Length: 127
Image 1: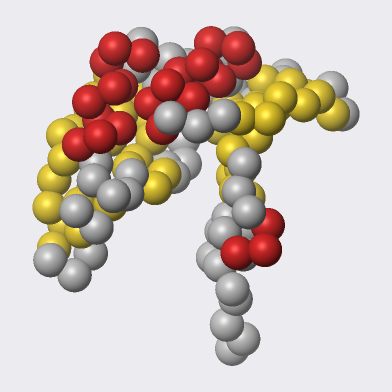
Image 2: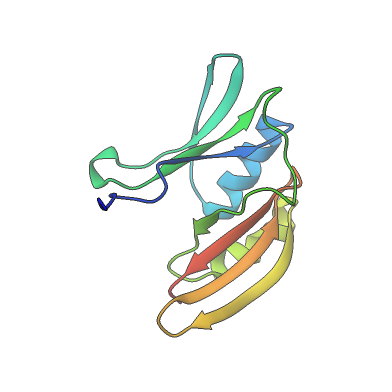
């Protein structure tokens, strides 16, 4: 069996209001996102350095993208410490669903939050 570079190549988080969702994620993660529109979809892309091979994705608003708490769970990078983004979620309009929780010393910590669009999203960090 061949190994892959990453198990995940791209992710899309469904949203109902692209501007509201973009503001939420930019606030919580202290980032800037790139807005785009293609094939009838409004997108806000998580910007990464393509040369590093890191996985990226986007917030997407379209007729095919429906936000929800029971869909696929993705874990966003909460490094260096989950307490930093978790401390901003409620103030940005989201809700912490599960606080920072130790998985194991080898794996690190996880948490869940609901974004402004009703999506349940995971966070992971080593600390």
